[in-house]
Amino acid sequence: MSLAAGPPGFLSPAGVEIAFLLVGIATLAAALVTVTTKQLVHAALWLVVTLGGLAIEYLLLTAEFIAWVQVLIYVGSVVVLLLFGLMLTKAPIGRSPDADSGNRWAALTVAIAAAATLVWVVVDAFRSTWIDLSGAVQGSTKVTGASLFRNWVLPFEALSVLLLAALVGAIVLARPPVTRHRPSKDALRATPPRHGARS
Image (cartoon, rainbow, N blue to C red; front, side):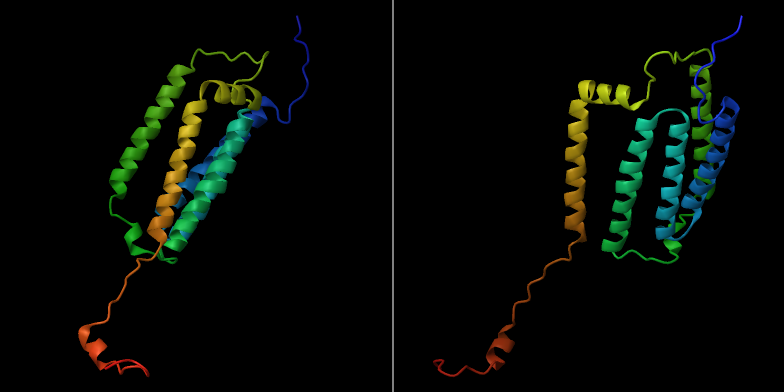
């Protein structure tokens, strides 16, 4: 008994796995550079590479809606907001010695523990799970958009209000303080009277 030949994809299953592995390695390397560099602007730019790699991973998993959300919101908004924050707060553009807190080993331990926990949870959850691809793919634009605007409208709107409050707070913090200098009494006495003024 032979299986019916379906329409060919852009990559074979083995090709998808190889591309997923290579993009994952590049994304991990960019993430390591992001957290180890001492230049804040370079860290933000490497964060763009990291988030872009995650978007490619989502595309390889046929979750195109999540991939474009990753690009539009995180790469196009959050990173740009970080760069504007660096420029408006007059943060150092070059190497900053304050970027290294001295807790690298603690951070490395927490990162390895979190990664091991996530890998174990995902492998244990999907070890015997089969995804039916005959219907609408979970994670596609149609299914995710319908679920978002039917079941998650209120959290979506609440998040927009929260982002607006964060933007207003960033503008308030970036504005320079306004100080009003009142002239002292000695300065007022030393000021010569103008013509026509009564003595």
